[in-house]
Each structure stands twice: as structure tokens, then as C-alpha cells.
Amino acid sequence: MTAAARGRVGDDIARTGVAAVLIVAAIFLLVPLLVTILMAFDSRSYLGPLPPPGFSLRWFVACFSRQTLAVGLRTSLALGILATAISTSAGTAAAIALERGTFPGRTILSALFLSPLIVPPVVIGFALLLALSQAGILNGFVRLLCGHVVITLPYTIRAVSASLAGRDASLTEAALGLGASERQALWTITVPLARTGIMIGAIFAFAVSFDDVSVASFLTDPTTYTLPVALLSAMRANFDLTIAAAAVLLMVATVILIFILDRAVGFDRLVGQGMFRT
Amino acid sequence: MANSLAFRAVTKRFGSVVAVNNVSFDIASGETVALLGPSGCGKTTILRVIAGFETPDAGSLQIGGVEMAGRRPYERNVGLLFQHYALFPHMTVAQNVGYGLRYRGLPRSEIGPRVSEMLELVKLPGHGGRYPNQLSGGQQQRIALARALATQPSILLLDEPLSALDVKLRQELRAELKDVLATVGSTAIVVTHDHEEAMSLGHRVFVMNQGRIAQSGTPDDIYVRPTSRFVADFMGHANWFTGRRTGPSEYATDCGRILNVVPCTQPSAEQCDLCLRPESIDLLPATIEAGPNRLFGHVADVILTGASRQLIVTLEDGRSILVLQQNRTQLPWTPGQGVVLGFPPEACVLVPRDSS
Image (cartoon, rainbow over the protein chains, first blue to last red):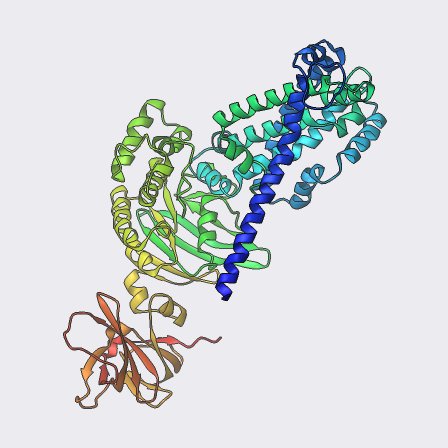
């Protein structure tokens, strides 16, 4: 066998291997979701083996009638919207400043803003709990809001930075040369150019806030808790398929959201540029 | 004519690097000056100081007789053309060209007609509704020019205006740019590293080196009478001889040749270098007899470049001389052939020897 032929065989094996890994990964991602969907419609009152003998909507009814889940959903939505608003405004401002600034300590500041991506959420949650208690902030919602602004900020900063990278400086100078003040240049040039990044950042911020368990579980109080926290405690209290029904509802909401986003921004841009382009 | 721009002893440092070193010059109204130099010579910094993006460490700057110290970019009436045009991607061509007019206090009703007028000027009428990414490179360049001129700036600054275009388009647009500048009568500074661009666009050329103006003058002046080896080399290919002046119109090269030069007093030192441009050398048949300013050698290589051809001639002592010829004579010079190089005394330019 020649060297070239050996090379070809090697390539073929590698390609088959990559395809196999992709298929296995897809199965791992999808099968649990499919099982959850199937179980949510189970007509049995206990957790039995697959497949379910009959289908019903009883778990969805249970889900809607359970008080804690409704409270959690309300809190999560309010928290998500408010945290997203704050994080998007602050993140946009920070990204613009970091992108154009040449001030001392710029890299350190940038690293600091992005550190919640690296610091374990458990640490953030615990640290915030201590700090906010010391500061006398005991209101559960305010505490959750602080926590969620901290953990969503890296996403909004990254998304806006990515949309500004490399294009802002000379455009702003062009605007200044044409007689626009710095404030006018910011609103007519920089912000419109960052619009996609701002939208993408906001979406990620909402998703992160809505999804968070670890930080929120430190900061909740008996009357203020988020949906993921409510689901978690519901599962601990009595493990039934209400949670599966709630999960299916969340999946439907996510699919609708993704569909809208795809129409509005384009899914490729959302995933491909928002976070991973530097 | 009134001075449009006065640059007085300006120095600008970036850390320990002196980007602009005590530079002074005046530009008359309606004049186009080309700042020419290698990258890092400080030419772009001068532009940015005039535009107000950089504050000089020392010196002063006046535009139209008004001191510019402390004025922000938008408080000066300066038009800018960027190397990569910096067109606003989210605005149409008309919005781009009209952008400055909003902030220069033009009534809304006059913006539309003025934009059309500018598009007419750059020969792109009817392109107002397009977006920059729907335009070719040459069209973007022209829109950027229209945008810069729309506000009737007292001085127009062009940073490498044609360098992002391919060669053929560059020559076309160079002529157009020259026309537009003449039509508008704008005072302009063109920053470039291309000596052809500098010579064809500038009424005057400032050759810069290491933060200073090495030589300034008309394009012809600078090309024909460089005052330093740096300028001579930067303006085009030069053949060099080292030696010394032995009489008012006589130069002895280090290898013992005597060349006739035009009587001159500069440079004053006896030791100096002699520059011989490749296009000012005639090729004579090898049968010709010896005489003043005749060098014997043989053709080492012939390089055809289209309109001209370059011949590399090796002299008897082994040194190579580049000769540039119009590609028009039918005489086929071939490698190995004997040849005599002849040139008039006027072709020899003496410059001071670099101390470095």
C-alpha cells in the first residue's frame, strides 16, 4: 500500500469517526427531551416504565393548578425582563467604553466584567448573599435582580463588543470630522451599528436569567423564588410528572422564541456571532 | 493668496517615539500639498493633528488664520477622506453625503439639492438610494469624497485616498480626484506613500522622513533636484556613485572615473554622492569611442515591463547600472552584448553624503 493510499484510509476512518460522534451526541441531546415529552402526557398517576399505556393532559392541569410554579413563573418573568433591561443598558455602555477607550486599566476592567463566566455561579451566589446581607438588602427580589445583572452582564458586553469590533473608530472620527459632536456621533453611528449586538445580548441575558438555578437558590427568600427554583423544590417534595409538563411548556416557549428570533435576526447570527466571535 | 493652513513648530510624541518633530509649513488657499513618506514617517499624524484627533505636544496650528488649539474635531471645518472611506454602513449614500450638512446648520430643505449636486460632482448621480455595501470600491471612494466636500471644508484631508484600489482604477480615479479638487478649488493635503500619486496630485510635495520634512518643493523640483539620498531614493530608482568633487564641474568616483557635472555650489562638501536616474542614460553602440560621461560595459539582463524596458548593464569594474528605456526602438539589446552608457552633465545630481 502506498503512502498516499494509507493517508486516504486514515482520512476515511477519521471522517467516519467524526460522523459517528456527531450522531451519538445528537442522540444524547435529543433522547432525554423526547422521553420528557412522552412522559408529560402519561395517564398513569405514578412514575412507570416506558411506554405509557395511555395519554392524558392531567400533568399539565396539575402544573397550572400548582401555586408555587405560577408564583415562580411570575417572578422569573419579571426578574428576567428587569435584569435584561439593566444588563443590556449597562453592558452596551460598558462595551462602547471598552471598545474605544485607551484608558489605563482597560484590560483589567474588561476581564473583571467577563469574570462571572469563569467564577462558579455557586461562588457568585454565596458571595452576593453575604455582601447583600451586610449591606442590609434583604428583599428577595432586589437580591435576585443584583445576582442576575451580575451573571448576565458578560453576555451583553460580549455581544455588543463583537458587533462593534474594528469598525467603530474611523466611523466615529468620520462623524466628528463632519461636524457631529461626540454625543451625536454615539446616537447616530455607534448605537445603530451595535443594534444587532444589543438585541443578541438582550436575548442571551434573558435566557441566562430565566435558566439560572445556582445563583438564584442562594438569593431567594420564602416568598420570592424563580421558576427553576420552584421546579427544583417541587421535585424534592414529591417527584411526579408535573415537572415534565412544565419542562414541555418551557420547550414550547423556547421553540417559539427561537422561531421569532430566526425571523428577526437570523439564527446563524444569533449563535454564530453573538458570543463566539471575538 | 491667503494662507489657508499654518503649521508652526509642531511636535507630537507617542511615548518615546517622536512622530512629528518640530515641523512647520504653510499651505496657500486652493493649493494641494502631498505629504509623501514611508510608513511611520509621521505623515498621518500630521493629518490627525490638523483634524483634531491628536493634540500636539508643542507648536500651534491655524486654519484660515484662526488658532485651532483646544478646538474639537467638530469645531473645525475640516473635510476628511479615510483610507478605507469609513462610509456609514447603515445609511444610504444620500444619508452619508448629507450627514455633515445636518450638523453644519444647513436648512433641511437645502440638504437634498446639495446632496444631488455633490453626487453630480463625483459622477454618481442617482446613486443616493443605495447602501455602501452595494457599491464598488471606486464608487465608495467617490462617495466618500462627495461626503467630505459636501460641507465645503476650509481644508480637505485625504489619507491614502487611492491605496485601497487596484492599479488601473487607481490611475483613473487619480485623474478624477485631481479634476474634482481643481473644480472645487479646495485646499487639500494628500497623505500617500506612493511617489507617483504625490507628484501627480500635489502642487507641492513634502517628502517626510522620521518625523521631519526632508524636502519640500514642486514635484519636478523634488524629482530632478533631490537634496538628500533618502529623497532621491524615495522618488524613484537611482544609480549611485560615491566619490568627491574635483573641480567646479568635475566629479571623481571612488573607482577612478571622472564624470562631468553641471557647475553648482551645493553640496558644499567635497565628499558627496552622485545620483544618476535610469531614464536619463542613453544606450550607445559599443563601437563608439571613449569620451566624457561614457561608461563601457555589457548588457546583463533585459526586463520588459510593457511601455518601458529595464536593462541591467554591468560595467567593466563589475558594478551594475539600471537603465530605463522607452519600449519603442527596434534595437534588440540582448544579454552579453557590449554597450556604452552615455549621459549629459545635467543628468548627474550631487547630494550630500549621509553621515549615518
